[in-house]
Structure formats: C-alpha cells, structure tokens
Image (cartoon, rainbow, N blue to C red):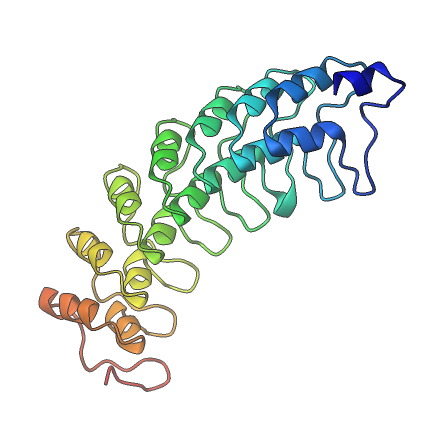
Length: 260
C-alpha cells in the first residue's frame, strides 16, 4: 500500500461498483490499511458503493471493531447512514450479535438506537429475532430504547423472540417493565400464539407462567394458541396448554373448523 501510494495512484478511485480501496479495507477488517488510507488527502471515509453500503456499514455488519472505532472517531462519517434494505450500521451489528461494535456505535451521541430498516424492525427487534442476548441487554440498558416497540406489522421484540424460540431473550424481555407479554400483532397473533405455532415448549411455559397472558386468546381468524399448535402437530405444546386449563376445546374458527 505504501509503495503504491508513493506513486501517482488515486487512493479514492472506485471500481465499477463504486467500491473504493477504503471500502474493501473496511470490509476485510484491515485496520492498518484503513489508517494509511485515511491519512491521505482526497479519501472520502463515508463514500458508499452502488448498493449504498459505506465502509462503516460493512465494518459494523462484519464485526470489525477496530475499523468501526477508527471510522466513528471521525466527524465526516455519518454513523446513521443506511445501506442495504435501509439498515443502519447499528441494525447490522445488532442483527449479527456484534456486542462490542454495538457499544462503540452507541457511544456516539448522534446514533439513533431506535432507527428501523424499511421493514420497520429496530435494532432491538433484530437482536431479539436472532437471539442475540448480549445485544438485547446492551440496548435495554438505555433509557431511550422502547422494549415493546412495534414494527409495521405490530410485532414486538418479544413476538420475534418467542416465534424463533430464543428462550434467553424471552426471559430478559419478560423481566422488563413496559413489556406487554400478551400484545397481539395486526393479525391478532400474540407471543404465545407464535411460540405455540412453532412448537417452542420452553417459551410456551415461560409465557404461561405469567398471569397477564391469556392462554386462549384468538387471532383475527379465531385461531387460539391451541389451534395454532394443533394445526402444526406440536404434541408437547398441546399438552402444556391443556394442562394449563382455561382453553376452549369446542370453539370453531372463522371457517368453521374444530381443533380436531
């Protein structure tokens, strides 16, 4: 790099996809190369490629802590600049469980911890969806993060964690004030409905351990959690719900179908 830069070489010249040398160095996590390039005049530290992905976005997505730290230390880098699917660097780091990167980004006062992507999922929703317990704890440690935030379809972080069977994240969220464990989405599915539908027995037990969870709450199609689990053949969850009691056995859904 040093030899090449001593020649008449443009350090900011992109390829056909608008990917600069700095873009590639950040993507691969090469800290020393990043430092060398940023020391040259004319190098744009925030230049995106044709997909809108900046050097910081790539480094955050792939967990390159050192590169992230270098880039966020510059005033000419926008830490909230979105890339693919309108995801911010923080969204990418949260989704992939890069805890140290999340901490580095949140240390910037101008980083929005609640900024969603085009699908409406916030960094907390993405961390809950992928079972990133450490990131969930970091985000919930902030006063400006809503633990019960809704996406465009009305799903909360708890819904995502329950749907995917992430027991640790469910436990963390249920321990938080301000989390409604029975909050339905726009289609009437509650966290219990999602867990029951996908056969996540331990999550079902955790949710049923709460007095404020209705074990028989129907969705928009009149499907209760027991209906959801019967529909998908999850015997273990069906037994847990039946042992709990207070569940309807002879109700019809909107198409007139019974549990059996």
